[in-house]
Length: 213
Image (cartoon, rainbow, N blue to C red; front, side, top):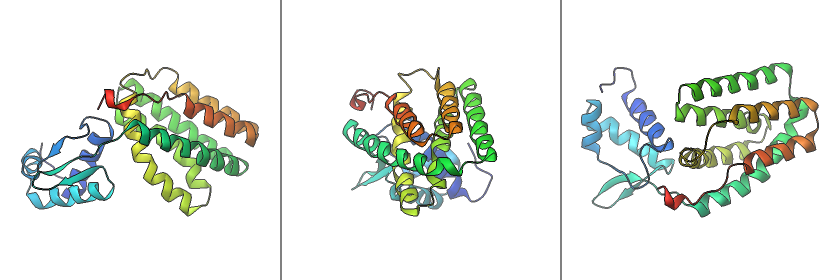
């Protein structure tokens, strides 16, 4: 599986991150540098660079004398993140709804169409990515740098949870659920929109992740 586009380390980083987030590399999976280098038919230097970036994002951890492995994720951690997310996302939706333009609504509709296409293609990573794109839209529009930074930190763990959860869930209703959120946003009712987004997040039943990882 040779890589021809540059920079090489970026390609390795992106591929490994995608596999971790999508659950293809479950927690505890070892990531030997030489094995990865052989897989991509490259030298070890860009692999080490890619792994260092993944460590900084806490997607992998370094083990003494054992190299790197995919970091763990627990039900308790995810439950705490979702509690925090309800508070923050409710706020960003409430504060941005009055700013939404018709162009914004078209952008949100486009994301939903991309999500629908990913579902048809059974591309787990893309489904989750577009789901996060939809919700990230409001964090980015709230004009609060601290909230955006916090969301970017939480988002990766939310995506990992969704990848595990989606193994037991159907994607039926996912597109419709997001279109319903758009309809609520169009009413301009900030309180109703906040409640709808929180209810939407609560629809993800918090499973016992230890059963699947």
